[in-house]
Image 1 (cartoon, rainbow, N blue to C red):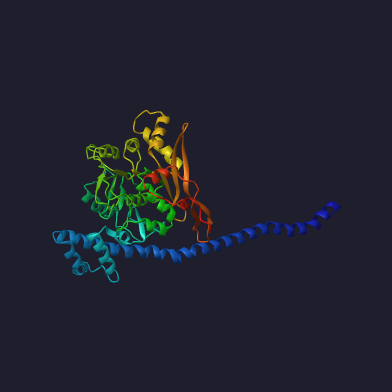
Image 2: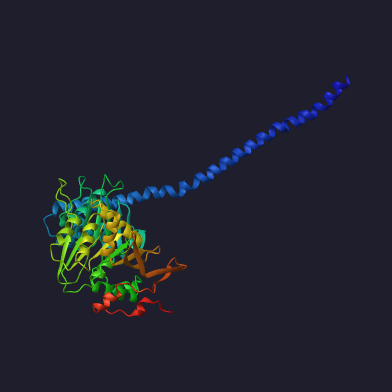
Length: 479
């Protein structure tokens, strides 16, 4: 055997030993990985089978059975007892439910009878499932986003409630109950409506095909007893000095405008301002949906009218403002200025109708001035900007800015005087302002309402009319 052959034969065992090791290692790793994957698949697959599956099967069964009982009971009332008095039907609900259970033995009403009676009572006598929310004094707003999602506002914060409707038809039935007594209608040809409840609460509704999630209702509640200036002081909306100042402004017949965002409390503040008007004055209020609750004797309330089914017959706020000038008003109070009626309002303020009050949407007093300019242009009159600004500067005396802060509280953040026109710019001067100093551990905003130390230009006018304000209210108190 040659030297080369002997070397090859000597190295052959080593190659045969090493070769399997190289080949087996990957196989061992693959086998180990396969086992690990199998174990992880088992681990991730087991929990859903044990926990989630039973819940999905059980919940619909209970809900369907209860809903079926409620639907059958309601249909029975409509079919058999429709001609009877509602109070008599409510008093006889126990008997009606017992009859339904006897006829449908597969239904079990045990444990749900009290809940069923309460819901049927709300459907018959009130506004269905949302009736308890409307009766709850702590709830300030109710929002129905389709049949299964109902939100409520408590303490300035929105929360999802456990209230639900059966279906879209159930929501529509409640809507009809709200708008029918007011002579309003809501259907596919007129899918939006602004209305009000008997207690003055404002209702806005929009239905499919415009609302994709189902009929949507927003109800802004108003307390049975309107808030007074003392309530606003207690809530921290304004201070005693600010209250004294705005009361003097109303008594001095200054033209005042309340601006702020949606839900900031503009209408409540307007209502409080209106309460300071003398009982001897003739007051004309103009609103989309009548919300103001005035206690004076001589009040004429006007409300807009939507178009009829043919799209005709609509009466806008602008029409009512122009008509109110022929009604010999001492005060004109406009619920909200949002369009061309701004021009008619400014002209009224500039032609002897002093002491007028109105509200509008804006983020600051300066923004309110800009919005008024835009709204005047919406009247269709091609007026130069300077002419519009002269109208605004001559008409308005005070702008009250109201804001809803992040913690849900509503504050008057600015009381601003409109001092006049310098060149092309309307000059504004804050009399009172809100100074924020921080946020506490509970997320509540820390701050205070303080005077700026500047007396308004109309201070002397107040004095001449016998309305005396102590100079101290314009200076910040030392703590």
